[in-house]
Amino acid sequence: MATSVLLACGLNEQKLPGFIHISEESNVDGSFLISCVLGQRLRISNAGTLLVCLQHHYQHYFNAGMRLGYNTNIFQGKTLGVIDVLSDMAGEGLASKWLTNTEGQTLTEQLVEDIRAQVDSNYDNRNSYTVLIDNLSILFNLGASKLQVQQFCQDLAALAKEREKLTVITKLSNSDIYQLTDNNVAKLGHVRIQVLRLKSGVFREVDGKLLIERVLDEGNYACEETRKEVLYKVNDRNVKVFAPGEIGVKV
Image: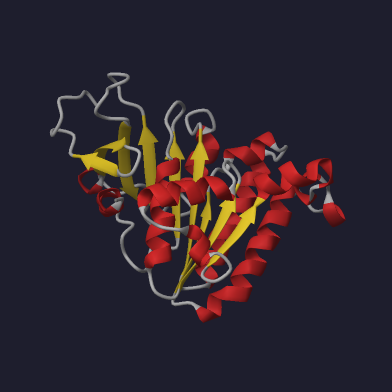
């Protein structure tokens, strides 16, 4: 159901690049990319996945997966681990560890520690391992500073460099508002996928545009010829992509 968008973004391989960043512009929703990648990783034999829920709780991804043709419950506790920050805060309220300063740690430091613990416990038994973080901008809403979010991503990028089979995928919504943070995080990695609005506004057949860029070792983006641009449409049970000239839309 999501094969075309994964192919377009280069996310269909068994081994993905070490760090991938998704930039989500205001008034568009790139959550479908997290669900598509999650389903693809779960279908790979002996591939481990850690889902860090900041924007949506686990049940959201279960529901999205069922619409896309996979059941996350089958994999949870086996090849799928979950850090459900959102549900924990909803259940524990102000007593949640994510809302208290535990042992002098900031929220982002606590999150890195939990991610590292999950990776340490499961990485060696898997052919590959992917960490999916669904929305970094929620960390700002929870009181993290721009510097703390940047350091959080630097720690994750360093973790990916330490482990050859590890991939970290982050997404930041309102990337046009948090432009400096978004650019700095993107330059930590190997691939940047921008989820953008259409210049022509709302269009029934198309929801938005994806711009896929390779990031060079120097932190610069690859030349214009190697960038890929596609249009996308999210339906109830699938995600379709189109070449820019395929539909008469101003991109």
